[in-house]
Image 1 (cartoon, rainbow, N blue to C red):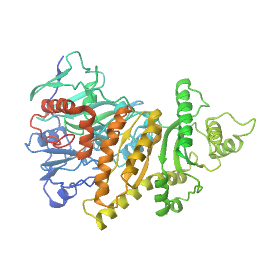
Image 2: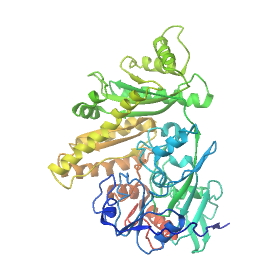
Image 3: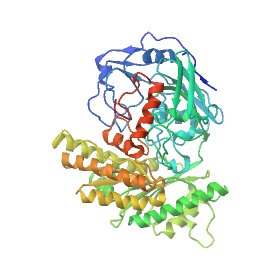
Image 4: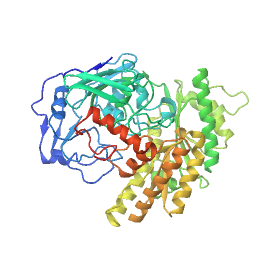
Length: 531
């Protein structure tokens, strides 16, 4: 059956377009600092009718939220920047769902939901991102191990298509049949959308072009499409009750094999808890990883002193573990920790966690932020965030002082956890062969970390790009995905990785999807693949 689109709703705003030089200049760059940003005007829609007016204007349109993209995907290349900053409605939630505007900032959403005792747990690290942005990139973050990516939590979207038609899509309502196409009818005509036939990597994180799978849901075509197929104006998100107690543990480990053994045990214990619903079971949502070079950066920048943390000189890396606990007081928590190793110690999640750390010889050096200790939690999280901040600062100084062509050069790849050690060996060998200085951190519980080149010259940047393309082939061989959580955007290396992954035919299939929904090629031109 055809999928029926409708006309847009709402009044047309008199102040939709802002031609002011300052407004335009403020939207010419995203977090990737991708060069060449340009635009004629900024549009700030309030209604579907506003969005439709922008999309039928005849000029290229790039929809943006917080412009926190790390791929250049939120850097305009001319035409209209459609800013979602006025699409900020949060409807009253029920026990399981909430409808929100695309411009709602994640931090604001979480605060609002918390007043209702609810949570949206798959949020990425940066809480300044917007709902539309994370859907457009299928964003993921630290807690993907337990909660999955954004995709699993989106129950519906309202999308304005090129030509101004509006689709209200509810998960489960439109599923791909044996024809391999979605047929959409609306005021602007009939669109026959051929779904690609390539096989996507079977991993927990994947932000690698248009979603494609037998029997897929139509809503999934727009999740991760990076704004190239339509403009999301609102979404229905799945929710869960607010988590009772979050405990963070900063754990120094001497070397990577020991760290991976600990991570493997915590992963397995958590999976058993989820399956058995054992009230005393270990329940880990996320484990972050910071390598030896990252620790050097923390010390050089004084982050250890700033956040009042320490680790032994023998530590080769740090793990930051997010443990979910039942509701308990800090007094109860301290009692459980102090008696965890006693012969008659308590059988609780926190005590079991301590015993696992002790089994791996890391309990004594671990620093914990217990539930309710917000200051200590922010300090431990601050340590983790100080690593990318320190790397970005060094890249910026190199660009300023050494060569203006220097840019952030980093990988965002994921493999099945069982292959993580092999992937890390491949990274180290490839970078060492090129004589590159690299810091690596990220989400070890997902098999997804981010090696970043610390460039000493523009030649290091070029060598880093070559290494990343080499790694893309190896990661695919290991059953992983070279584009895990940040998307593709305009970045030439990431676009090359996308072509490596699916081949020329795969890119051609994506172009046919784009042609069906955006025949003039006006939505986010140059994003995902070249114009």
